Length: 161
Image (cartoon, rainbow, N blue to C red; front, side, top):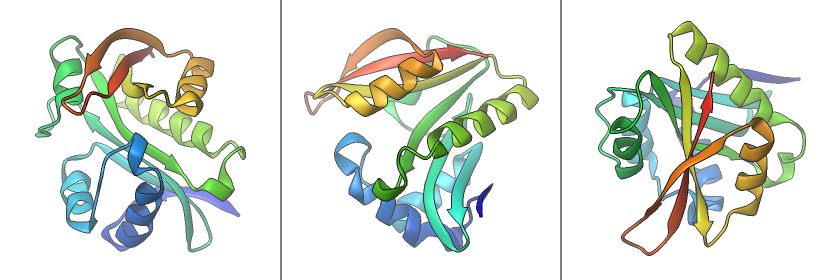
């Protein structure tokens, strides 16, 4: 049975492994990085089948002590938002609706917390077509773009709640 549950430090190895598989479109994260992100996150949820972690979502609330350029970009422009730092689904579990389950769970949590907007970025150059398509289907709209020091260009997108 597939279920959602809060992530714990015991999930670190599985979450780090999932993240490593898509590092080119997220960012590097080792177990120490995950522990630090978990400590400042407003929500970190895994989707699991038994003991197998199939995916996760990690989000920050406005005002979190999170030193991240994309988070800061949204902080400078939005009020009452939740920032989706990363969402990853295992390669073999894609297409099962798990990303949608995680986003629905996050939206419910955001409503309870009084947030008005979900915010996320996705790669434009080079393009992460899967993420752009997923977010577009969910109703996310581009608010702007950022060019990162690496030369990567990201689409800064929002979804009103």
